[in-house]
Image (cartoon, rainbow over the protein chains, first blue to last red):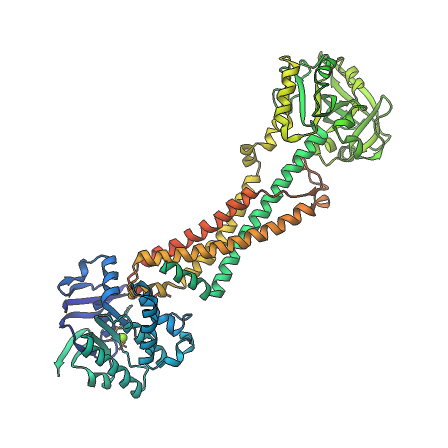
Amino acid sequence: MVEMIDLYKDYKVGKVLFPALRGITLKIEDGEFTAIAGPSGSGKTTLLNIIGCLDIPTKGDVLIDGTSMTTLSTKQKAEFRKNELGFVFQTFNLIPVLTAYENVEMPLILVNMPAEEKKERVISILEEVGLSEFINRKSNEMSGGQQQRVAIARALVKEPSMVLADEPTANLDSMNAKEILSLMKELNKKKKTTFVFSTHDPLVMEFAERIIYLRDGKIASDKKK
Amino acid sequence: MKILNLAWRNVFRHRRRTLITAAAISVGLAVMIYMDTMMNGLDNLAAGNIIDFETGHLEIFAKGYYREEGLFPLDTIIENPEFILQRIAKIKTIKGVTPRIKFQCRVNNGIDELPVLGIGIDIEKEPKVFETANTVVKGEYLKNPDDILIGKDLAKDMDLDVGSFLTIITRDRYGTYEAYDFTVSGLINTGHPLLDRNAVLMHINIAQRLLSMYGITELCIKTRDDNKLMQLKNEIAGKIGKDFEVYTYKELNAGIFDLSEMKRSGQFMLALVVVIIAAIGIINTMLMAVMERIPEIGMLKAMGFGNYNIVKMFIYEGGIIGIFGSLFGCFLGLLASLHLVYYGLDLSHMLENIDIIYPVKFIITGEINYMTVLSVFIFGVVVSVIVTLWPVRKATKLQPVEALRHV
Ligand SMILES: Nc1ncnc2c1ncn2[C@@H]1O[C@H](COP(=O)(O)OP(=O)(O)OP(=O)(O)O)[C@@H](O)[C@H]1O
Ligand SMILES: [Mg+2]
């Protein structure tokens, strides 16, 4: 369970502080399939980054299973990300010189697992996101949608307990998007993986079981289906 | 192991970056090795010139004669060289012995006067130790009693030539001024500045007459085996007793051969500059290479890589690039050095008019010091690792998002 308690995040732009989050209090239960929606600039990415311990809030706290993130050391945060989290970035952040296979393999490097099993996992997840023909293609030689799917595969390959996905369908056509969302839904049902999306995409909101609207860094509404 | 594997693969993935970085290391190291080879060559040539023209391998003086370089006293001389010659006659490793008299004097051509070192030589024995006879470039060797040999540079400076008359003015053993007229019989060109510009050579008996003495100032010895110089020195010292002293050419020229002195002489500074330039080249490219990948560090962090693993990965990468670059650099440096060893570098036209204090000939041939090659190799690897460490340490201090956004 993730609890956000009165979160604030200010960005420094030159000498002025720009408030991106202004008092977010929110609870996300294990096994949720939740979308965070809101206009561009409303703070969706910022919120996901803070949930994933990739950034620190200016004020407030995030509790994950009761543990306060602000008290964790850098090392403990890394451990948490390694064991529990999968990330899909809005900008993908693939390593351009690596192939699809190698990018997806990266998170497994730190995991103790037989090499054979690693290989199987990487290939099967790439198949599931529909990239079986592009396994050995370098990521900078792929289309935006293909790159996005590599990024999704990379987040899922470890089978983490929580996946934070920043606009995971922004570059996909509705066919592909549906497939990916179904895949995620399946994982969510089978393995109780928690999914938190940020999105503008009506399709994602259709799939989501809970939709949180952000506006100007505040929660405007929070609806469960 | 996993991290080393990853690092290894990264090195070959970023092919262009790896090549540029390794090339910077290679060039830096190659220059360092080449410079060292040249320096060693210079030292060797200096030693060669000193042995061939100035002192031989060893010199015997009367006790108390040798106080410091450049001092030529006449109060403590070898009065009876025959005594020593007899005592050392049976030593097999001695190739030749010749007496010399060195004294301070002034050359006068009728217009100008210059202070020089007068050297009295025994023309019979001289060739057994020194090469002077082979360096006469104009005129001929000493023959008549009033013949004098001068260096080609001194000839130029004083407007003298073969057949010119000159006067040597000095004080004899008792401090009385003496003058003697000579005829220039030949010009020598040794490559040793002392002989070429600052000395005159005459018959030893003329020098004795000029200085009102019968003895000599030194006995110069050439050995057959210069690796056992200290052994020979001790053997001679044992035979000739406490009234005399033996010095090696190295001891007599500590200023040139001493390491601490070398530092002062600018050689060390030159080496230091080369090292710094090489290091800056390596630091520059390595720094760029790592900065470029700070977003990647952010990504690794997001995936749960701890700082320890990230730093480790980059150290491995820096190390691998360092090893390859250094290996190639050493190879290049050795190749260039071998050229210097076998073909040499002809500096004759460059040195024509430069008055260098360093006693060298005109062609520098190098000598490779393999210890230097090894230390240069280690230097290359260590510098590349340290240089990687610094920006990576900085990147690990960033929040993952900050690293991801880093440009
Ligand atoms: N590093 C930053 N420095 C300064 N301001 C920032 C930074 N990152 C985000 N912001 C600002 O914070 C606000 C929230 O940004 P955020 O990226 O969270 O929005 P978002 O809801 O994800 O938008 P989008 O839908 O366009 O992705 C924006 O107004 C943005 O300009
Ligand atoms: Mg965003």
